[in-house]
Amino acid sequence: MNNSSLIDLCSTANYLAHNAQLTVTLIIKVVVSAIGLFLFALLFKFQGTYMAFHSNARILFMSHHVWTVLQMIFNILCHSFTLIRYAMKHDNPCDFLLTAAVAGLTKGPIVFAAHGQIWALAAMAIERCFATYKYRDYEKRTALIGKSLILAQVNMKTNRINM
Image 1 (cartoon, rainbow, N blue to C red):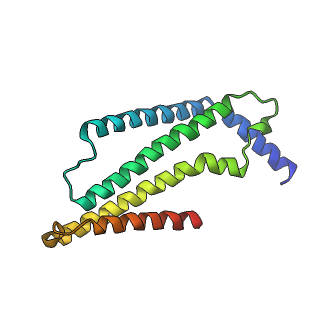
Image 2: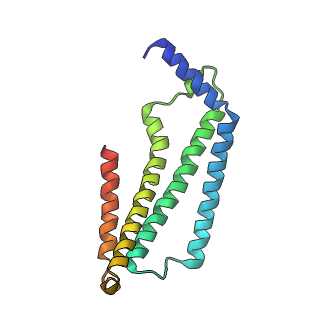
Image 3: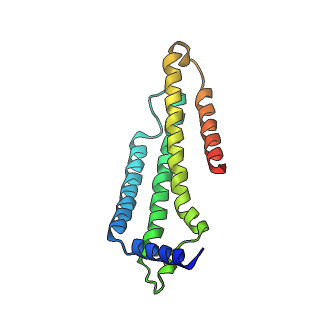
């Protein structure tokens, strides 16, 4: 990396660290995620894990709930880390730069959970299509389809990570 591109990166990092709009956005994301976790806790306290759906749909809904809770937890942790890091005072603007490993650890879990939510929604859509087209014998079946779709989600997530 040449010196001019490093200086550009350092000035960009310094700009982001002192950008009030970015700070407000990160604070809002942390607060909304914390409120979401609180509301999820209330939902599970009053509703429990019981849902009046077929066992396949219940399994897939719970999978989506797990991904959503993980998304909120990762948002709180990762954005709080960023806010703390940007609040620190540095004489050298290059001190705001992250290594690739730290950047992956701070942003990777958020992306991982977001993709988990996407695959969970796709699995729910597949399950609902199957339930619609095979409605006569679908209700008599066990949760094999739901469990298979959970395995497909895990397979898609691991393949997505390896790419």
